[in-house]
Amino acid sequence: METHVLPIDGTTPDTAILARAAELLRSGELVAFPTETVYGLGADALNSQAVKKIYEAKGRPSRNPLIVHVVSVEQAKRLTSHWPKHAEMLVAHFWPGPLTLVLQKDEKVPDEVTGGGSTVAIRMPSHPIARALINAAGTPLAAPSANVSSKLSPTSAAHVKKDLDGVIAMILDGGPSSGGIESTVIDLTEDAPRLLRPGLLPLKTIEEVIGPVEQDIPQDEGNALKSPGLLTKHYAPNTKIFVTEEPKYLIKKLLQKKQKLACLTLGEHMDGVACIVMPGNADAYAARLYGELHALDDGRFDVIVAQLPPNEDAWLGVRDRLLRAAAKE
Ligand code: TXA
Ligand code: MG
Image (cartoon, rainbow, N blue to C red):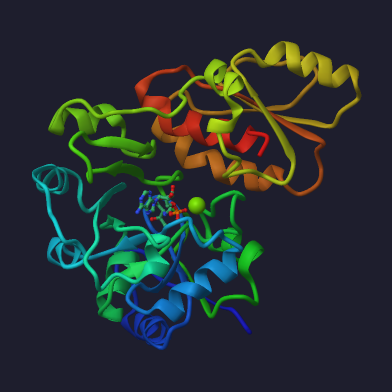
């Protein structure tokens, strides 16, 4: 299949282009589109045949459920069988934006979306193209990140094309995604809210609205190394990547082994290697992370070394992505 890449304005999206994309979605095809976090690979969330195509295109295990993207709270409620108070509070503060809520699903949500489970993940993106596309399609869109399963997420149309050219019908090119890492995922289906995936919206900001959130995912490197099974490989470049809080020693060792080295640091200068100095602010770092990794991932290097940012709330999302990129399997 030919993949059409259509440039589209990010603030006032062209209605004729949106109509073409919406028509493809309504006929069960896949369209990649920008969101404020990363590019999504969209399908009509209520069409199980269309949703199946997402798993085929990405090579994604069918038990790994998808996020459904909506354009209004009413549309979200129609996908759920129970709308808890915490959902009401969170969406009032953070929607549209990079927050995904896991809720009890309504029966109209196909099993293909939820991996056969009884819960559904929902988010309302803020990106004008994403919003206009959901409106034009007239249906919620199931949309994982538009990359091959477990690989780097895309923050530009070119990244999507690299993975999915010839496999999907259309890519809407609305320029780079400003957020750079995925949404924060919170499970609201049990008594206590639980963090399932740290992301662009900091946990502390969420806790200011609903109080303490359970968190039983590994957060620091020590933990990750002690229980590698808890960290599944994901968001990974093809080039081998190591992450460490103290890159100096590792870099020295790798240079002695004559490895062709790229590195991402947080300001420190490293002798003998041209390191990319990443921003000291978590939002600015997140916005650049995948773009830098995509650019380094072209076969020039044997190894990428990334300095792990401090184990602080603001950095949870970035640390999670780096640790998973470096995880064994
Ligand atoms: O920022 C984002 O969230 C991007 C953009 C495109 O919106 N989407 C994204 O989707 O990252 P994906 O499929 O790559 O990640 C979905 C995450 C996974 O960690 C998945 O396990 C979790 O959400 N998830 C989805 N449905 C779930 C459910 N019913 N219960 C628990 N976790 C769920
Ligand atoms: Mg993904």
